[in-house]
Each structure stands twice: as structure tokens, then as C-alpha cells.
Image (cartoon, rainbow, N blue to C red):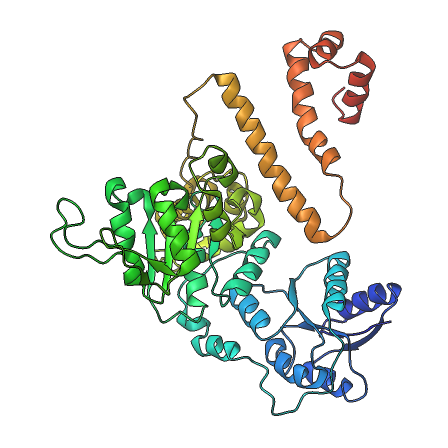
Length: 486
């Protein structure tokens, strides 16, 4: 049997945890403040602590270090209603095992607590009050503080909370990171923030768009060249690897790297050295590599245009940035952020319910980039008044493929749409840690429009519709009743 502390000033949260965890066979002590929790440790040591960030008196992030002096290695799970990247960074780097954002269901919370219990090592004796628990990293980030970081990644959705947590884990890990996501989702912003929260934050951050480089000179742009290496090389030239020194090098659209250059990139990643064009002597590099792409690597590897070994080396740690259409709950916060930081700076402008509703009804194929432009357009038209539906620009047309037959294109669109939905739904189900019914969910999404199209095509003739669909007439009748389409 395990003993769990729940530290939160909301009685409903404490009651819910107590009831749920007690049913799981644990004993639970609750405290309304960090100070009360510290007093509890004088009589009993917990196996896990569930700790809110916003507490009366000492806040939760400050309390982590004080609790660690009392409870040793017992895991601490942080909970907050205000999940941001800074919260994730500070919580995880000060020693929290994990963190949850409110609102959460108790099944999800219990799954995190159980993981913490499984992770916990046998607890040693109480630590010396003089022992340093920070490991040197928390102080580094607290000195910077949120006020010195003008970049913000906005989002309260579960998908973005996972991104925040991944960024917090990898910022100081000093390993390659592959950032994936559609165009316009903010991959370069992710890279900049990882750099800013790393121990290299005072070193250069060099973003390089590989498609923008001259194809014939891309190797020279990356690694430099020596005089006489090729026609026109009249003097030695440093490449971006050398300019990056011990900072961070961000390689955008890494999938567009020519095969001939991929070999040199692999060597730079594995051996931390590179050779300029025309010079066989390797030079050391201490730059950290972050890379991004909006393409699918398995297809590129299968087509022979990207090295499998380089892919594995780049993707030591992957962060996938979800498209905006998969995190529509973030739209109000994004809208407020862009309104606050608008270049127009009107004093009385504000969001209206109809404007927010209109935002939710768009697909945002251009993701955050399109969303930001739409907000700038709307604030200009509103001229300081409330933002309304009519202030939004016309929706951008969806890109249409021109190669291949139309039926093949439509089929691929369907495949891509199902793949996107399945990935998001599976991740959400796994995040809850409960049994799911993705297959039934998908049928409920795709069957009604399919049946409706067949019925329309066959002028509501059920027998003909069943034949077109390849279903028994009785099966079609049942489905029409199931989906209330009779």
C-alpha cells in the first residue's frame, strides 16, 4: 500500500483524488498549502506527492525544492490550471516527475500517479538540509525568467501540453531533435525556444532553410570551402557549422538535403566534426543540431532519397507539432495573444463570441501562419472596435493537386484525412490511459456521409443504394435507423 500526499487549495480536487486513489488501495493525506504539506512530512513520508502550482503562501514550484529536502526521491506530480512552456520547464527541471493541466479526468491523473509509483526507487534516508538538489539547471532558468523571453508558444490543449512537456525534457539534454509538423505550425519557434531554455542560450542560434540554398553550393554553405576548391572559390569561406560554434544550428526542411550532403551531415552528428569543401582535414564542431520537416520520412527513405541512418541519428528525440485544426480549443488564447501583440494597437478592440465562433468554423490549412495573418486583417478592419465575424478575411482556398487522375487525388485526400484523424485520436486515447473504440468512432464519422451520398445518387431508392454500397438491404435499413437518416 502506498501513501500519497495531495496538496491543493481546492477542496473538490482533494476530495476527488482521495476518493479515487483510496478505491485503488492507496492511503491519501491532503493539504491546502505547501507549508501544511511540509508539516505532514514530520510524521509520515509520502511515496508520491501531487502538488498544485498556485497555492496560498509558498507556490508549488518553490515548494518542490523544500519538499525534496524532506521526502528524498519520492516523485512529485505537478498540477496546474495555467500550463505554459515556462511552467513545464521549471517543474521538470526542478525535479518534478510529471505535470498535469486542469481540467483532467481522474483516470488520467491516476495513471500518472501509478507511473510515478512504478518509477520510484526505494526511498533513502532524509537528505541533508545542505545538499544541493537543483543540479545547477533550475538556477540557470530562473535567472533568465519569463520576462526575458519575448517568444511565446500559446496553447492550453492537451496536444500542446504534450509539446511543452517534450520541450522541457529535451531543452538541456543536448541531443539532436527532429521537429515535425505541417507548414505554418511553428517549427522554427519550437527550435528557438528549445535553444533559449538550454544551457546554450547565450550562444548563437543559426536557422538555415535548406531549400533556400543554392543546390550546387549547399555543401559549401553548410561546411565552408577553402581557396581553389572549385571554380570561383578565390578565398577561404566559413560555413554555418563553423559560424554556429557551440551554439544551436537549426536545419529547416531537412528532408530536402541532397544525398551527397547527407553523408557529411551524418558524420557531423556522429563524430562532431566536418570537413570544408576542398579540405580533407576534419574540423571539430560543438554545435547542437535541431532539424525540422513537413514531410514523411518513411516514404522518403523507401524512395531512396533520404538516408535511413541519418534519419535515425536526427530523430534521437522527436517533437510533433499538431496542426491547428487538431487543437481548436487553443484558438481563443491564440486570438487574444495576437490581438494583444497586434501592430495596430487599438485601445478598445476586443474579441466577440461571434468572432470566436467563426474562428472555430475554419479549417486553417495554413495553420498558425494563416491564423496570425487573419487576426492582423481583422484588427485593421475593426479599427479599434469589437472584432466580429465580418472582419475576417475570406477563407483561403484549399490546395488542389494537379497530377494524376481526380479519383486518385480524392482517394489520397481521404487516406490523408483518416490518417490525421487516427493519429490524433490514438494519441488522445493513449493520453487518457483507458480502453478506446477508435474503430467504432471512425465508422460513425465516415458511414453517414457515405450512405447519404449513395442515397442521393440513387434518388433515395434503398435497394439501389444497398447494391451501390455493397450492403444487404436489411443492413442498410439498420444503419439508416442507427444514424437517424430514415
